[in-house]
Image (cartoon, rainbow, N blue to C red; front, side, top):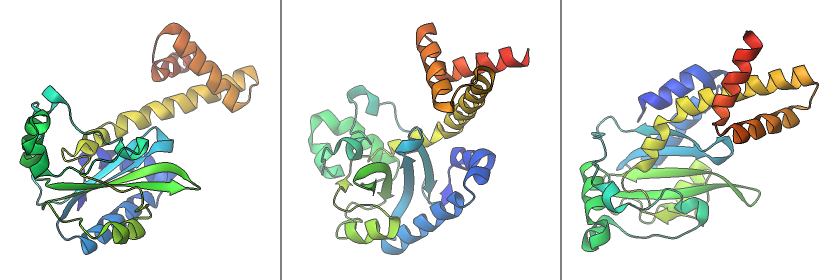
Length: 232
């Protein structure tokens, strides 16, 4: 598999310095997944403790067509199934039999994804991330939940089948570079406030968040204002 361009951008520009092993770890995860399920054509890792940052790899043979707007007419199963522990075990055929999900399923099939598997990453009884896997055949993941969970550092007990047939995590990965830029701005602004006011970092962060809320702007926008004022 290979990284999506957005994921590669995020890794190249930010994470190679902060976590030099992440790129290799992601590639190793993809290799292990494919060794267990050869039909696996995509893998996404989401870090809930890092503002839900998502990093995605896809098989070069998979045609990553844009998701058809039809899926948004009636909605679709949410990647957050792992987070809120809802269980959805629909497969493509079942979805096509349900009028509510018919358009969604057809759009998913067009992307070359016939099945998906969502596995939570748990640390001390707390879900800290999620691994989403995608395959080109409907039964690719059947009987492999435990092996995949063990190979990817996830939990098989929280596995959810076919919750993301539309490969929605790919869209989340597109936002990773922007999320990381905002995180850096917030870190810089927090440092400025802490140094200027003689505050603990967590207190400075709280003040920045409060200022953003009061002004009705995003945290990144508030951080940008602080930085600009400091540089003026």
